[in-house]
Image 1 (cartoon, helix red, strand yellow):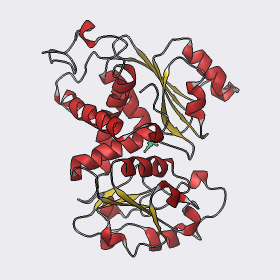
Image 2 (cartoon, helix red, strand yellow):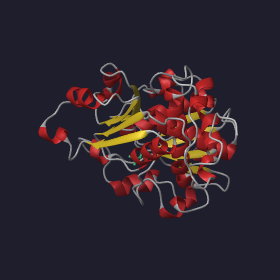
Image 3 (cartoon, rainbow, N blue to C red):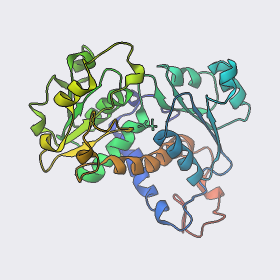
Length: 321
Ligand code: CP
């Protein structure tokens, strides 16, 4: 894998390989010194043009756990505030000869553009309403961890599908892994023609009981340029996932951040059906696996056996003890 731009570029074997790699990294997190030397001497740039807590922090921590040097740039407070263009920003940061650039942008297609402007491998950490592939990979990993293989599992994705890059990536990834997908929400928030991706559509939650997993989406008010629902209160009455709507065996996911009391009720967020914290924990492992895959997997630019651990006595991933 040269870049991670879209789930469309991944087949089932690719997703399974990333998940297997992520699983192997879980052991690193249990060590006293939670580091392996795999990416020592490599530089990872994290460039965020939009707010982020989970994605930015987990990519940064993932790179550090792999011993990479990390440069984190947020558009606010950088020379972007002085009018520097994306292309010039990439040219500037590319002067450090990074091996990878992780980028989040409000513009669909930004990551793909960046991939054409730099020698670095590019990871799409969310581009507008388009895609959020690392979120989809961590969600697949989390689900397999909790319910086993996704073949035949029924997943309902509920809420603001229209503005959700998470939905677009997750639908593709879950289908690739054999799940059956229904997207549900008010007609104004379900894109016309989304069935072409291979999912079913529902405009109410009457059939929610069939779902093994309910994946709630955030109401993305920052991307709404008009009123898509009469009010959040009315939206919550019709589409909020609360304990009364869930059966005892159903699991709940959400990419975060959650609008508490809008798409999810507090009793569900904090209840036993919630995988939300597990998703965040998986994010670190899966993003380690993504960086490994693009920088040390496949063609392996540098044999792992040429680097030895400095601080850790534990055997690093990919090396003999
Ligand atoms: N799920 C997600 O992308 O969260 P952040 O915006 O906090 O990164």
